[in-house]
Length: 202
Image 1 (cartoon, helix red, strand yellow):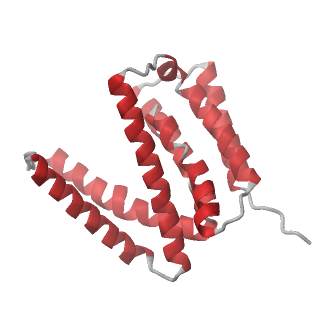
Image 2 (cartoon, helix red, strand yellow; image 1 turned 180 degrees about the vertical axis):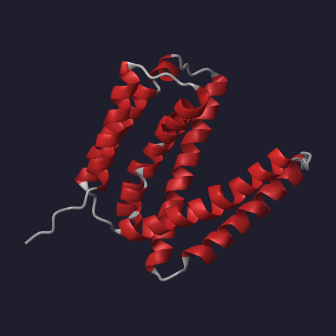
Image 3 (spheres, one colour; image 1 turned 45 degrees about the vertical axis):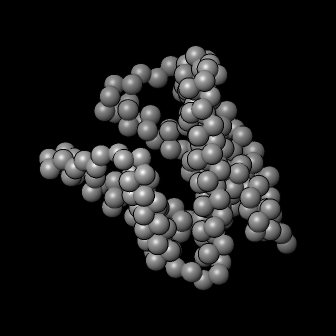
């Protein structure tokens, strides 16, 4: 469910890009995103069919939606910054510093314990998340936003859960069914439609 909600970032990027940056709405991106989301819904249909809006799940869904909106506005902010000549690496470093400060204050206010394990698995996973999963990944993604626009770059959010499923297939023995395979095919089709270059007008 979270994967489905967060994948709506592509629509939000198109909407906020038009509203806040004056970007033109590209029909191909919207059509591709809709097809991709349909494919994603088919892949996760077992989880979706068992979802119910009880109190805890509704609250989680609300937090997921708020996170998607926040992520989209961050995409738009990055696009705006790059159009004004602000460098990605330095701005990304400042953003992560602000985020670290906010999370530290939140931990202090909640009196939550700070734990650090001096084990190989813990340290290596932390380094992986910090270097590859944050600095390199976000630097690359924000650069992509500057090059192809927040609408088309946002389509990457549709591919995240599909990549996770592929890794699960390779390393965790996940078995695909016909519906899931068809959904994955729709995601690929949507990707092609959303990211293809528009034919220049004569």
